[in-house]
Length: 143
Length: 143
DNA sequence: AAAAACCCTGTAGTGGATACAGAGTCAAGT
DNA sequence: ACTTGACTCTGTATCCACTACAGGGTTTTT
Image (cartoon, rainbow over all chains, first blue to last red; front, side, top):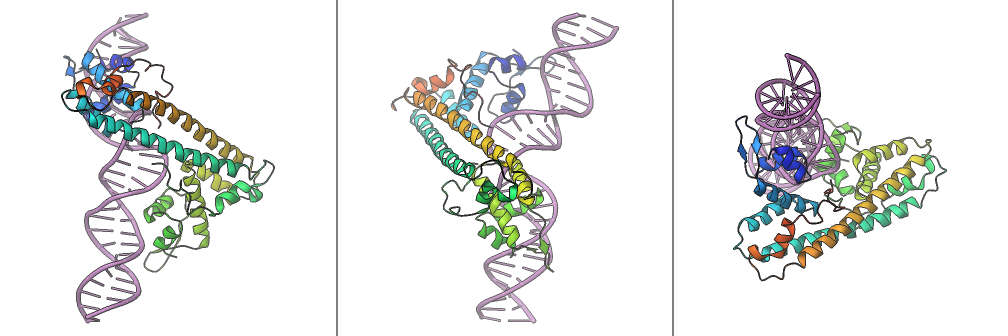
């Protein structure tokens, strides 16, 4: 299987495949006489695993760690569970933060009713003021 | 006011201030005899505005656009409202996507009950399988 | 035989900062 | 006068997870 077929089968860009190889997430595949990469089912399975993890928004570092367990089936999997739990907490925290943002944006939006010039716009004034700014729980932008 | 005082007053890192200057989000300040940057209240107001926007997770590009209205108070502010509306929609979309992730992670977590080796771990198996993978609405990782 | 489609390597760019290195400046204490 | 430490300067590199070329070689299709 050549790189574009692999990429297609895993629903991802072929440049991403090469990128994963460069950062050692995917192993170096065999090459044919012209130097083209040649993949097999194992590569596809691994890539699917990676893309599935990415679709769950896991960072590549964590995926690397999960692949280690996948590669060593005799290891205890406690840490796998812990990793998923942490990921879950991270997602829940992001949701909470975004709900906060949503509230703030709604409040901001309600300050202006569409027929002003910028100098009278309640939204811009709201963004200027730093009332409740220092204590806002979402003061740290999402990384 | 010197750079560290400005940064402190706006609750941000002083390297961030220099960064904003480099990308022309903040104007070049005056310099004293030793070449130290010297800021005034206008700078602080502007930086607070920017940081307030960033705390609402707005991209710098949108902030640039908002600053344009702030700098030109006679412009109609329709576009400001539109910008906030778009930001609101973007935040709501992110929330929806994360709720989907959360469901998936819960389902994944329930596949393993802590006392296995990696070879028997339901989570790893779940990540291996690409069932329901192609159609997953959250297949595109957040950028 | 020519054109289109594929593949290669290597480099640069994205956003929004953050983290130095290496040098200069300033204020306080000894 | 000298030293120490805190502050500032510029410039470059790093982070994450890709994405987008440029400039070449190869394979497949027409």
